[in-house]
Each structure stands twice: as structure tokens, then as C-alpha cells.
Length: 101
Image (cartoon, rainbow, N blue to C red; front, side, top):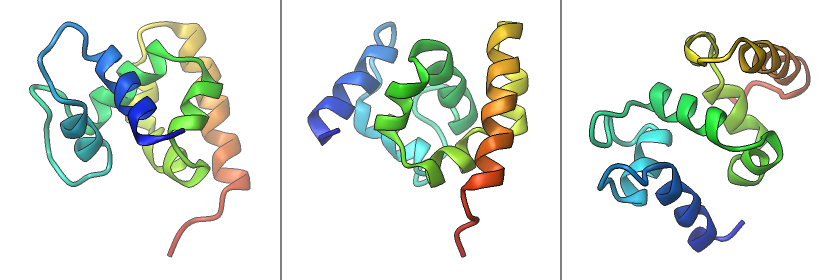
């Protein structure tokens, strides 16, 4: 996915706030603490609740997803079905994606 498409998707999840996609990207990458009132965890919750898994795989590498889908993120998902799905995804990512040094 190119940068333009990535920014478009990040803009779409922020449709109700005037938060630049560059700021969202910086928070997700851990370079900024917050974008508006969103933290890295709350942005990930919003992404997991907004986009299908295959879209997220286009936005992030497996290594990034392994780091971003934390226990806290999964616990904050609103719907039990999503929590169950991402508990499984999180477990599988930890089994198959090596830890970066």
C-alpha cells in the first residue's frame, strides 16, 4: 500500500476529528504520544473495529501487528466476537512472527 492510500485510510478513521493522518501515523509508530486525544492503544482499537483483517495486513507488517495488537488493545474492543477473533490472531502472531531484536 502506498503512502497516499495509507493516509486516506487513516483520514477515514478520523472522519469525526480534525487530526492529520501524519499525526496518527506518528502515534502508531511510537514517535508521538498522542494525536488529539488518541493514544497508540486507542488508535489500534479504532483500526481493529473499523477495518477487516486483510486491510490491516496491508497497512502494517506482521512484525508491526505483533507489537500493536496487545492484551490491552484486545481487552478494549467493544464486541466480544472481535475480542475473540483478535485474541486468536494475537496468539498466532506470537507463535509465527519472530521477536525483533
